[in-house]
Length: 112
Length: 112
Image 1 (cartoon, rainbow over the protein chains, first blue to last red):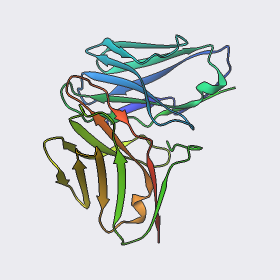
Image 2: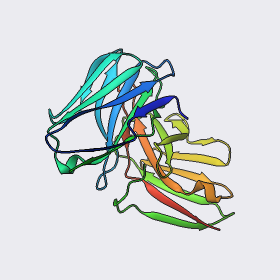
Image 3: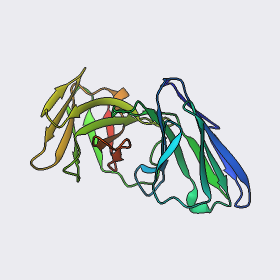
């Protein structure tokens, strides 16, 4: 248990569906991240939020929409995804100024 | 949580032997480095980190070596155990940027 909780753990969705991934951190951190881990690539950074403000968007398609309502919660809203978006989506948090990021268990997403 | 399908380099060792996992990084501006362990079905877990002003750091059964001249990082695991079987990632970061850049990972298999 790392203090970062992701739900759901597994998700299967059709290409026309809309779904959301949720991440919650209980560590008092002020930065949160979404990473994508796919079968063909290493961990890819998607978004960075610092103090609830998006500070980095790594050229992610608009069918992925992040939301950070407060420093403890992070969402990734998904709509009209493609099969190649199937991957493990990992949330992480860290404290500003410190390098170590704590990861959640991930959501295994399958787009059919 | 494993990088299923990704053709990771694999290191196979006998239980009780020492393991050395290597990583090359690309950004000469990186000033801290982290090793993560990812077991099947889990998110990456912090093992040990090192700042660029150091060339060696030891933890419990693990040692990280940093060679800035050739941009090389290694993780040494002493007396490797079956529980060490996992995928190991190096990550680099630099002051002023919150997110980490991850390497592609190495799969460690420990034979009993």
